[in-house]
Amino acid sequence: MRIAPELQTVRPGLYAERYDLIDGWRGLAALALCIHHVTTVWIGGHAVMVFFVISGYCIAASADACQRKGWAFREFMWQRVQRIYPPYLLSIAF
Image 1: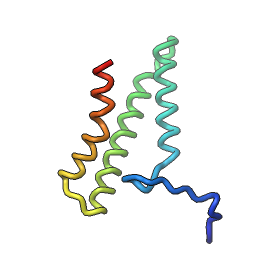
Image 2 (image 1 turned 180 degrees about the horizontal axis):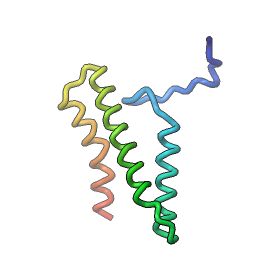
Image 3 (image 1 turned 30 degrees about the horizontal axis):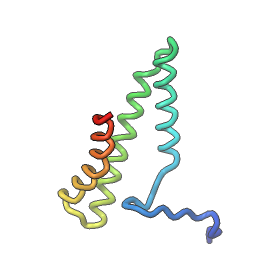
Image 4 (image 1 turned 45 degrees about the vertical axis):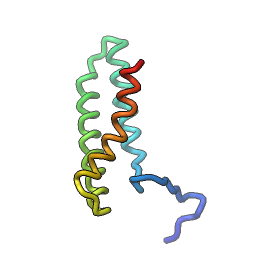
């Protein structure tokens, strides 16, 4: 079965795959956390658990992608540092 060229999405970068469903779950968890903080609905604990599960999956998928590319642990960690620390340091600066 061939996929029409206009339906194919090419996303350059380290990870060839991006799962839109995970982004949806992440968005729902963020919305639930906002609702928890603004109203008296107590769903924040569940939203945080969803964030933990998503984070664990994303880190495992990232490690697997690096391993498939033949990268060593050092290269994997360097990618993580490059991804995490710039926004972290920027947020501290503000």
